[in-house]
Image (cartoon, rainbow, N blue to C red; front, side, top):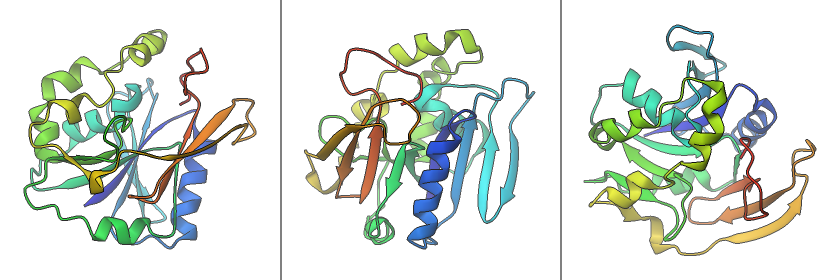
Length: 215
């Protein structure tokens, strides 16, 4: 399994916060891949490894699907699995042991919550390839179209349409705190905690009547 972090060129504060939590808890179970969308100036993907982390710069900003589209277009090994996170997450001390305990036998996708998983969870490369048509329909190569793709995100689409989808530990809740200006950037956020994976999701879009691209 690999950890894939879905990020954006303007989300360095959130991304660094997540990477610091990986460092703090000495995460070393598997490779970490950071996919950074919004590099429209590039002709193709640019990949480099730095301090043990693989960084992929993508020439599209496909909101929640940037990382999955990148895996679709750059990877071909059907036997790989990924735990897919947003950069606006933070891991806890038990994240590594939680991942180790997941049985990946015959797994195509696993969502973290019964109702709303925000596309966060486990994906196989095989299922990513099978949803090629859907994922490419979500590929956004124009900055001016970002809000359209955000508002028409089809959250959890692959989870909902994968007949083999599983729920991690049959979990249907979360623990929520806030709102606060978590990153000191002027955006109010709530923090949701998912103990079944020991992760925190720092959310800007939580029903307060407006949408931002920086979720």
